[in-house]
Length: 75
Image (cartoon, rainbow, N blue to C red; front, side, top):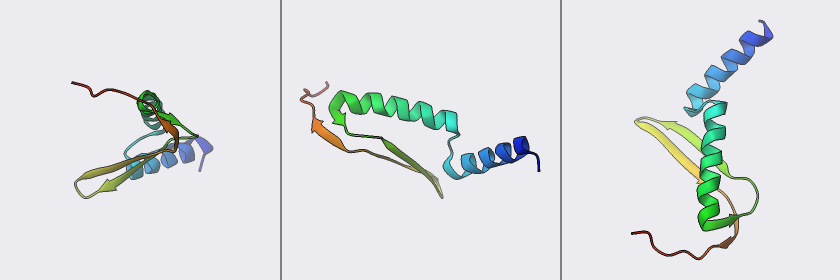
């Protein structure tokens, strides 16, 4: 199997498993990091897990924070 074909097939398998390709995952993590930084001081990387379920996906975002920023309620 050609290297290009192997990479393409691997990408399809990862996308089917996760529902996100690499570019979409990177964009989502960038957006989630921006939101997390509005409310917290994240410590390290943000972990995004997308698991396929029977009727959709379970999306889990995990990160550690050094502190919670003070903020007022949004109306």
